[in-house]
Length: 101
Image 1: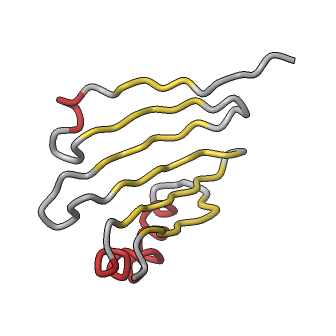
Image 2 (image 1 turned 90 degrees about the vertical axis):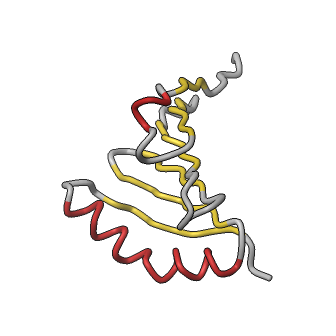
């Protein structure tokens, strides 16, 4: 069988100017759709987030560029999950990865 590759669509920068530095909408071959956001904010420098929808459930993975930012995001993971659920989304997971040392 042919190998299917993910496709990505760049989101208009003007629409995201107040939220993020850049964003991509990604369609994976398995049917998963995700939104990759790179934040350019003084409070969250270098933070990226990938929000995927898999079988109707949301998986959000934040990537922290350093240990302190990772700790901050890990401390807020439950609140971030609750905020998504309050908006009517079914959330499977909110996780943080990145620098640990």
